[in-house]
Length: 397
Image 1: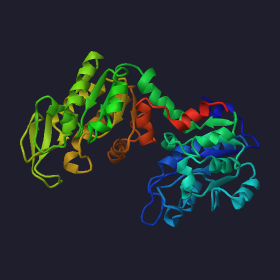
Image 2: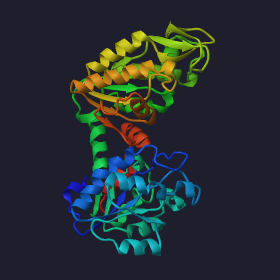
Image 3: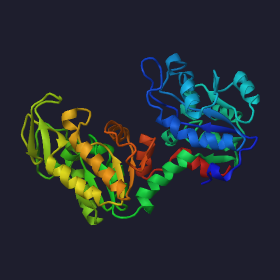
Image 4: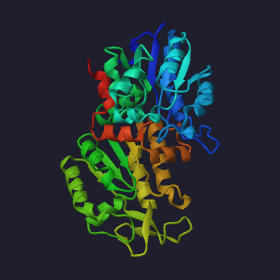
C-alpha cells in the first residue's frame, strides 16, 4: 500500500477524506478534538510539500441538511489545531464548491460541508463520487473511522484517481498498530476483551485464537462463560442462547494452546445503581437478586499479573460498569497494569469506544502505545475482514 510519504504534493491539490465526526457540546463547540489532532500530520505533510488541501468528512447521521450537524461548527477548532486559516465551502459538490476549489493556492485549506447531507454518500453512489473527485488531483484516505464503510468518499471515489491514491499517515499508523497485535508483535501477545455481550466479540475471538497467547475475558460477557460451565450468575447479564458457543470457544482456545483467563470473583450489586448494596462473591456463586457489575479484587490482581508480563497487548472493552464509580475499579486496575507493561517496553493498543473512554477517564491516554480512532473499523479489522476503504487503495483501475 502506498502512503503519502512517497509522494510530493508540490502544486497539487489533495482531496483528503478525514474523519472529523467529532462530538459537539450543547453550544455546538467541539467537545473532543482527538480526531482532528490525529489528521494533522497528513494535512501538514501536504502543505509543507507546497500543496493544498480539500478536506471532506461526515458528521453524525443527518436526515438531509441539518444545521446542527454542519461542519461549519468545527472550522474554528481546525484553525486552532493547524494554526492556519480554513475556508469553508457551504456544499460538498456543485458549481459553487468547484469555483472555490478552482481558486485554491498552495498552502490553502478548504473544508467541504457534511458529506452525509447527501444520501448518495452512504449509498456508495458512483455519480456522487465522481462529482467529489473533481475537487482534487490526488486522493488521500486518512479516515480510519470510516474505512469499514463502502461509501462514495471512502472507496467508490478511488476509481477516478488511477494511481494517484494514497494512505494518509493516520490510516497507515492504524493498520500497522493492528498488524503488530495480529502478526508482528513480540510474544507473549495478550488480548484483554470486555463489554456486555459475547455475541459482539465472537468473530474477534475466533480470528485471534491462532494469533495471541492469552485472552483475558471480563465485563458482562464473562457471565455467559461462567453459566456455560455450570456456575450460578444470579441476575447478571447472560446470553443463554450462547452457552454452547462459550464452551466451543473455550475448547478451541485449549486446542490452540491459548490460555483463557476468566474472573474468579466479582463485585455484585442488588440493583443496577451506583448506590446499590454490594458484596464480594465467588463468580460461580452469585445468588438470585444480585448481579455482577465489576471484577473482584482477586481477579484484578491475577489479571494485572498476566498483563504486566505481556510484550504486546490489545485492549477492547471494560471489565465492569466503569461509568459508575463503585464499579470502576476492575477497569482501572487493567488500565494501570497496561500502563506498567507499556512502561516496561510492551506495545499496547487500545480500541473501541468504551475502552478509549475508560483510558481518558482514568488519565491513561499518554501511558499506552496507541489509541485507535476507529471503533467499528478496528473491530472489523480484528475480525479478519477486508475494509473497503483500504482495499480500494490497493486496487488498480
